[in-house]
Length: 244
Image (tube, rainbow, N blue to C red):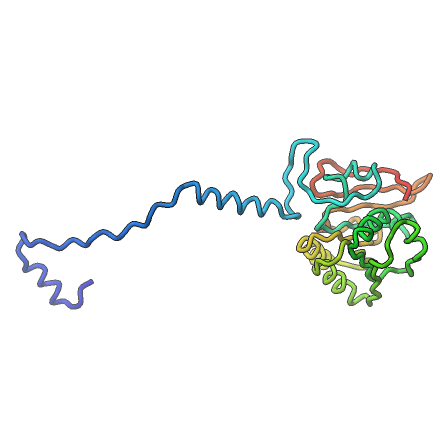
């Protein structure tokens, strides 16, 4: 850089034979082996792919999904990984109360509480019948019921899902929108917790961020369960009959 106009003219007045000093080359840092960045990239990619919200199609019979067996062989055979997806929100769309929607989850709740994992019931529409839960193998010492007002239901369920200290959170949502469900889904992903939301059947036509959607309706000889959406599973809706 020139400090003044005089410097510029001074350069023109120098003889052509003037030798200019050459700056010494900057010290070159030791070269990093090409394998180091590659190893770092591979490790970072593996971390991302292990996230419960990421699914990769694999060869038949293999799965990296973290799951919890439902306790129903027919249902587990349909679900990727053989059970309910951990770190995800499962949406149970019920035609009306009393179709076995709660009984469907009893084997899962029993397994979790017997493993000393807390199960939280957020704003259930009816008082849970403790003798029936105990008869199904649910350890009542690890069951918590929270009676929250409608305005607090979503916040309460989100905090329970995000806390990381619950094995499963069950939430009854007569009314909800996509944004609220998305927050619950992200909360479940952040902690790896099982999340279940019960919603009216009319919500089946609405968009949902839930990883799994199960429609529960009345059938001629019992209850019909229809798998409407499942992350990691190819194909359309599938119906099955379960004794729940």
